[in-house]
Length: 266
Image (cartoon, rainbow, N blue to C red; front, top):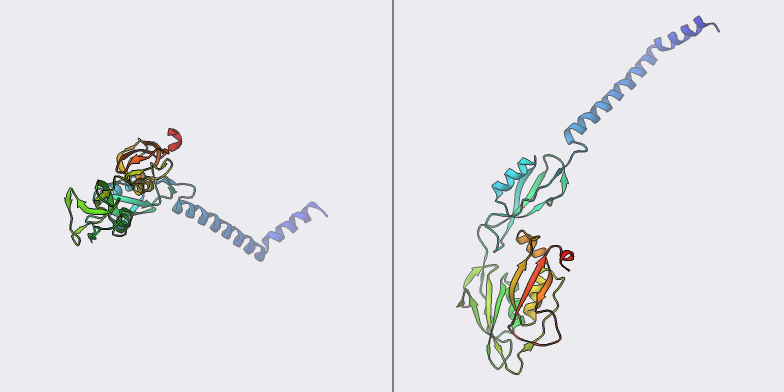
């Protein structure tokens, strides 16, 4: 076949209107797909992410400003009451600080309520110390200090005290309030043992100390603990006195040292 005939055949193939339409359609869809992919990547910021800042313990306005600075949004959806936190402060957030999210992501906030819920003070007189502690917990109240006085029955509750004054049953008080208990101590049954609370989180360690008829002395948090939420997650790396087989007088103090990174302190 001569060269001129080959050229004519090629020209004839591409000059066919069906072929031209098919090639045009393929090119159109290829451009459409590529364009849509580029546009989608621009809109969704594909491959780009922002680290979520820590908004806990900030006021709602401070949290909003900090989130805006990182091109994020905030929305308050719930509240709880934590006695030791500033009222209205951010208690928790979702996603958590340090998470990687896309620009414009909404950060859900739970804040500390402005007003505490109130509960009725129960009558704990005559209860055992452990029964009284369980009843306080069920009401959203906390056991404070155990005050031991001579009595025939050890750990029998004799008085209930709130802010250094005796509190009557039925009085309305804020949840989270600490109630001190005056309890009996029989001289023939007045010794206990110090539990080993190393490695326990803060509240669990406090429970163990109280359950062994001891008081919480100093609580020392290291520099890794920066807010109330951190304190709840901190673990005991040192206690004084340490766990021992030798008995200790009931009501004695136990000092706890806590950290978020106990490996550093062991």
